[in-house]
Image 1: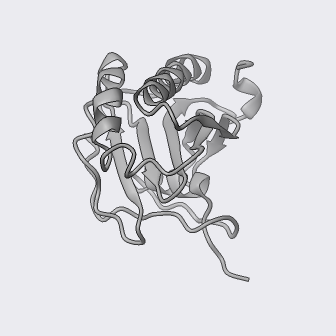
Image 2: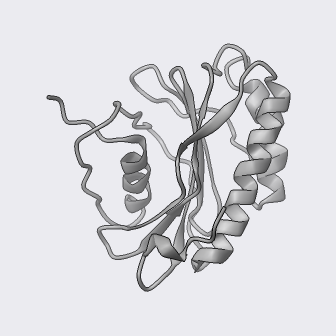
Amino acid sequence: MACRATPRQYRLALVAVLGSLVSAACAGPKHPVPEKSSEPPVTESPAPVAQSFARYDGLRAELIAALEQQLPGISWTVRLPASVNKLADGRCFFETRTMVSSADVVEPSHRFADIFSAGDPVLAKYGFPAFGGTDPTPGGWTVARSANAAGAIVSIESKSPAYLYIGAPVDSRTCDPAELPDP
């Protein structure tokens, strides 16, 4: 049996690169590893879990609505519930519900051009820079990312289907998922 990192474990590892290493466990599909990262430096302190949930789950909902309006033949559903996890360096990391598309988005979105036109205004509303293109990623993945000054990351990754991930460092002493409000 092959050992592969799940998309959730990959995102945790990506955040840990900002300050430490994260171990990936075995399971799930192979996940893309970008060759570059365009994240700005983290200049804001993490917010409490409840505040982060409200902010980033609102971003998730508005981004999905914009994508479904721009690409009407493609719907998005919840793949994984929201979570709070402890990173290897002891920091806590929150992730909104992970979304998965009903179909690949690369060609229907004109190689992500329609995703940028729909998503960039939503990102701006929530204090994120525009996607700014796709990252060169081996393995056939098309990946667009944006990160804010708090270290939160929005990522749309497609290799049929597409996934939407949003996560952020949070201020929590316990890193307990029980801190998450009911969606």
